[in-house]
Image (cartoon, rainbow, N blue to C red; front, side, top):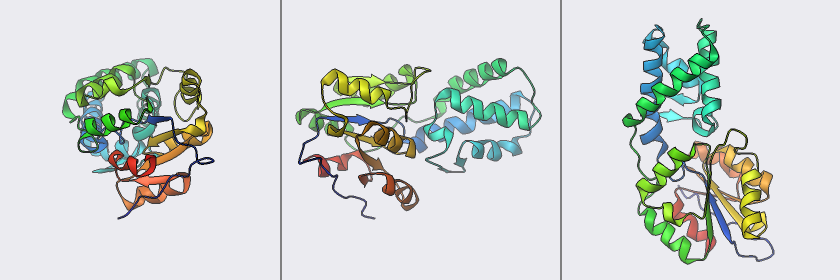
Length: 249
């Protein structure tokens, strides 16, 4: 499958900044988050006395179907608060009427304990080399993720790429993608226009973030289905971030 095509430049202008999503873009989503989600939600059902046979339905409520996931599902693109809300609404529909704050606390504790079941692996080979090359091009580099700061830093430090990032923007409970707030902060700090920035992500939410900001969008898609979703809303589609240089050189 050839999923590469050239990004459109604006009046021949070269890009000055690049913003990356984390999960599914830098981090292999399937190897990390699918086992975490399965273990956490299976544990949650057990704690609440619900049958394990309901697990596939609960996973599907967030966009996970067996070994596959929806890139527009809340478990893929959402903040922690959004995921918890989906889970609680599902529980309420299945007869669990406990206090929402109590359920939210339980979900967070179970999820924290389930992180050990995920494998934190980069989504492309030689990810350090990719960022060394980006830094050598003089680009300002940022992260914009719906994860919290602790989770984001653990990922970047594990991959050995934290030192390459000028800015790290995480869910702060107020601003999160596709709200363009973080892009505006990034552009304001380094005094360039959003059209001089490339957003690299793997979900329609990332594409909306780029559009809302006025930035170019490069989508990361692993299969034909995701390519079909992302291509109409992106300037280009690539298989992994190592292919970004086709467009930046």
